[in-house]
Image (cartoon, rainbow, N blue to C red; front, side, top):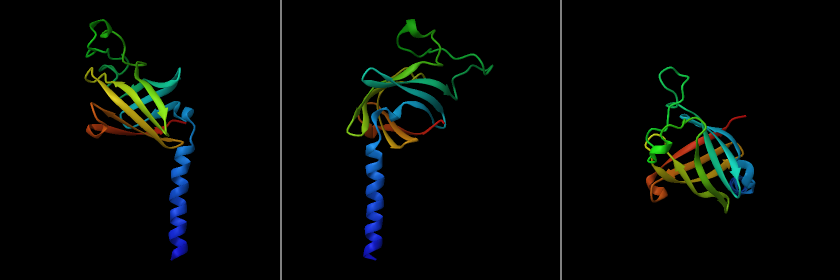
Length: 144
């Protein structure tokens, strides 16, 4: 009994230490969840992401990219949503990505963003207004 408890504890410890050992740049690449596909890239000392695909990205013809019509800056409302850099400023700190911002094309608002690699091909992010507790989480899989 004692050996099995120790084995479970060792397994949990190795999983936790594995997630913490992933290098900061491991977040770069293409990620997908149910509603979105993004490409994360390094921008100086921070990480950003551009929107590659979303369920609501195209007009009824399925080919024409929608415009950023809800942008609070009227001059940006005619730009295409596809390829828009909508995540900026993620900083890698203590095994997590923090202090990022997420611009939502759905409502034109900007939210706080944080994230953590749960494994080499699993990313969890949380967008929030004010405090992370009042936000929404997304689970991403790396696109190979």
